[in-house]
Length: 298
Length: 208
Image (cartoon, rainbow over all chains, first blue to last red; front, top):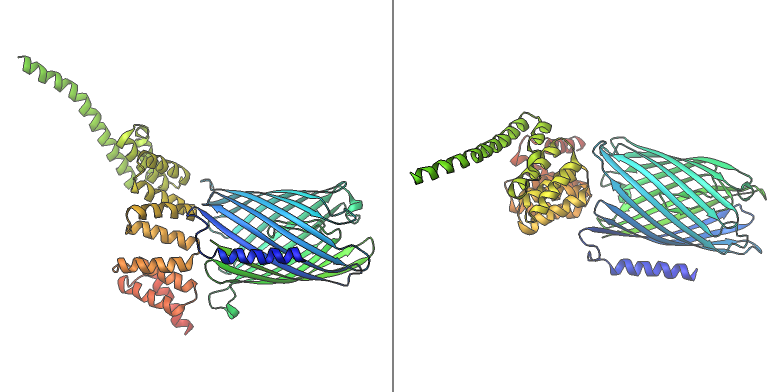
């Protein structure tokens, strides 16, 4: 964990030292996210807990293009003689925005790249190389949203996965609520590596409630997310997260709250539970986790 | 006799030039008339021949073409036209002001803000540029920036309701209901029938 805490400390030092709006010019908006999560594998015969830490830097040039670079380190603590996993994920994303006159709204063309490396002795989750293009559209009214994402993942040995994520979102309750539904359709090239499953399907529903100013505890946004169905080696484009666990995820539930401390700083806290199943050894378990993100904009 | 001949030659040469000038004047006039009738496409088509004329004629044609395309909601054409006008005259405040409109319509807040700020570098208290910048700040949800900006603008334009509207919105978004109410009351002093201000005050009374 030493490396992780050094990263966390370094990120906060960086955040503090850049408290003056001198870093970004008029044309660039820069944002730094520092995040940490901890999870407890409840009921697992093999796993104890998971801890992760990461940082993302995003830069937007006017309303034209944006780039994000990210790094996260995850440590999974196993029971008995199984070697703990120490994983690094490098993330790069680029996007551009289009505003054609034919439709009143904004298209976003986005391309994400992930590089996953770890010390997994089985090699089943190591050497992840992931490419994920996405196209999305949101109208000027901001009443609805649609995107289509495709993800191609390659892992060590002979495992590749194709993931399609059609997504719709819509506003209701006078835009104080937003519901996003995302389907996960994942095909595996090697079912022997994916718990005997050639394909998995899941549906994720994410509700965001925007509070009026002055809400209890000063909360600005509330999140509730639920996932039903099954998915394996999924990639979450919203969170820029790779679920390269070799076990099947069988649903999840999370609740979160966000605070906009001012125009520049905001924090997000999420607590949730994810259900997993290792069908090979009949090991069903939960990951009960907490996630924290602090964000600074310039 | 020789002098008379010279006058005659000048008259012959001048007449077609005068006709061309008259035709051009009519074209601009017709374009404005068509715009007043809401026929923006026809108004734009009339001035298309002048877009590549060069010099002042092209600059004005490009500005007007940008404006008519903005009215037609051809925002990308409007932006291109204003950008060409700005390239012809880098000092142009009109081109920059023009650019802010289609950019705001496309919710390209930062790009619009950039042009508004460029105007304010040249004309620090240009009211319209300040208002367009306030719109950009609102679009970017920069409430504290918008609040400070609106306060300063209200001090420089005490008779105008507009800065108070933006100040009230910023206060409301930041959760300071009393400050928002005070700002909206100032709006109502200037425009008693202001819909947004009245709605806020009435809603506040109902909640009390």
